[in-house]
Length: 73
Image (cartoon, rainbow, N blue to C red; front, side):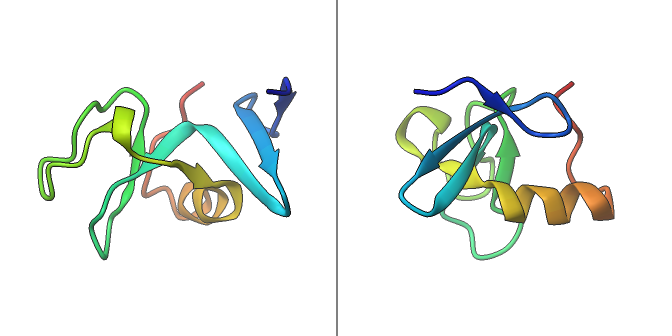
């Protein structure tokens, strides 16, 4: 694992050509699928952070720009 950070100071990791944000994870919902790592479980679909992938950096950045998801810092 690397210790790169985005402009918000959140850890990011590159896997192949995909950049993941380590402060967010994706549940199985069609919409509103990005959760902060402070949330352990999705109240809608029941997915857990432990069993789910980290979110893509570009998707997190889009939501942060729209202020739909709180910043982790």
